[in-house]
Length: 518
RNA sequence: GGCAGCGUAGCUCAGCGGUAGAGCAGGGGAAUCAUAAUCCCUUGGUCGGGGGUUCAAAUCCCUCCGCUGCUACCA
Image: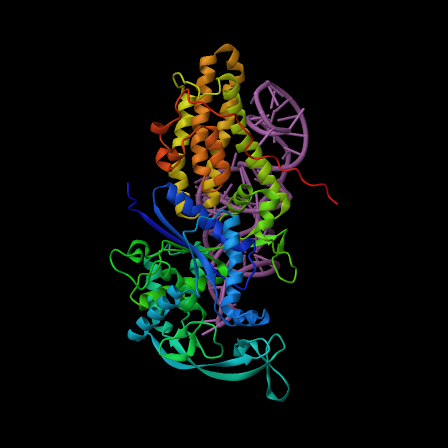
C-alpha cells in the first residue's frame, strides 16, 4: 500500500561551532517524536536535520584550530551526528551547508530572486566595533572622548560602509501580513505569532544578504567579491534537501514541499516566520505550512549560560536516566512552547511516579498475573461487562485524541491523555480484583486480564513515538508481531489473539534510586 | 518608553460570567496481583492590591503593584 500522505518536517540546521546541549537535543527530539508518530499513522515522512557551516565565526575557529574551514567543519559537524545517534533520532537526511547540492541550490535561488527583481546592490553602513566584530545601532551607543562612539561592551566603534546586496524585504510587509491572516496556524504558539505580526506591522527594512569582509560562505553568482550572508544560505537548506532546483512534477520537491513544519527555538523565529516566507514567495515558491517556536530549558532554576558552564550534554542525560526516560521527561514536563526547568528532582519524580509506578507497574502486575495464572498465554475472554466495554472503548478512543494533540505539537497533552488511560486501567484492576477472581471465578479473571492486556496494547502502540525502546519491549511481552505495530492496528480487528504464547514479563522502567548526597 | 502576556492551593498549572479545580508534595485509610507499586478519602486558596459593571466576577472594565516576552541583521 503506497503512502499517499506526505509529511516533511525539519529541525533548524545547528550552528556547527556550537557544542550540542540539551536545547539542541530538545528540538530534534520533538521532531523525532512527531516523525515517528506520523510514520506510524501512515504518512510518508521526511525528517531533516543538519548543520549550518558557514560564517565568520567558523572561519576563525578553523584558523584557531589550524585547519582549513572544510576540514574543521567535517570534524565538528560530527558532534551533531553523534547526538542524533545517541538519541536514536530517525532523521532521513542530514544536510550540511557546505555540500555541493546546497551551494548549487542556494545559487539557483539567488539567481531566481535576481531575475525577479528582488535583489539589488547597495551599501551596508553602520557603527562597527572591530573588537566585537559586530554592528551596533545608533541608539545603543554612547559618546566617548573626542566625539568617538562607544558600544555597550565598551568597544570603540567606527562608521563603516561596505557594498552589499539587499533583498527587498520592505516590499513584502503587506503580503506577509495577508499570509499570516490567511494562515492562522502558520506560527505557533499563538503568543509568538502575535509578536511576529506586531513586528511586521511596524514596517520592515530591506535585508542585507551579502558580505565582502570574509570568505567562508557561498559566493554570490557573478560577483565573487561577495559571499551570501547567513540567513539566505541557512534557510535554503530546507529546499535543498528536497532536491531544489529540481521541481519537476515527479521530484522529491513536488512530493514534500511545502514543508509541513519547521521546528525552531524561539530565538530564530523571526528568520523563519518573516524572512523565509518572504524569500520563498519572492522566488514564487510556496511558504512552509507551519513554524513552531518552542521554549528554553533552565537548569535547576538557572539560565543556561557559558559563564555558568551549566549546559547539560545530551549524552549525560542518557547515561544518568536512560534514553526513554529522558525523552519522556522532556516532552511531558512542560507544555510544548513554554519554557521549562530541568531539575534532578523533577526528572526523578517523573521517572518514579509516571513511568515506574503508573505505566511500568500496570504492565508488570497484569503481565505477571497472566504469566502465573493463564499458562503464560493471552487469556481467553468471556462476555464483556459494561466496565470492560468502557475501558476498551476508552483505549480505542486514544488515537483520535493523541492525533489531535500531535497535530498541534501538544506533546504534553498527548501524554496526559495516555496517562489518563493508564490511571483508568489501574483503577479497573483494583475494582475488578483479579487476584480474588482467581479463586472464585477463573473465567471472569481471564476476561479481566484480557481486557487489561488489550488496553495496554493500545497504550504501548501509542507510546512508541515517545519511548521507542520501552514500548517495543512491552509489545514484545504482549507478543504483538512487529508487522502489527502501526496505528492501523489500534482497532478490535487487531486485538490480541487468545492462547498466543507470551514471554516471561520483565520490568519496563526501574525506579530511579537517588544517589546519596556527598 | 511602546506593544503583548502573565500573577489561582507548598510546587507546576487548568478554569476565563453562575456559589474554587487537576497533577505532584503533605495527612489518614483499604487492599496485597505488582517495580512497598496500586486504590479510596483528606488538609490546603478572601483566585496580586484597590475600584467599577452585573441579580451574579479568577472570569468583563479601570487603576496600581510585581514578573515575562517582543521592540531587526546576534547562526
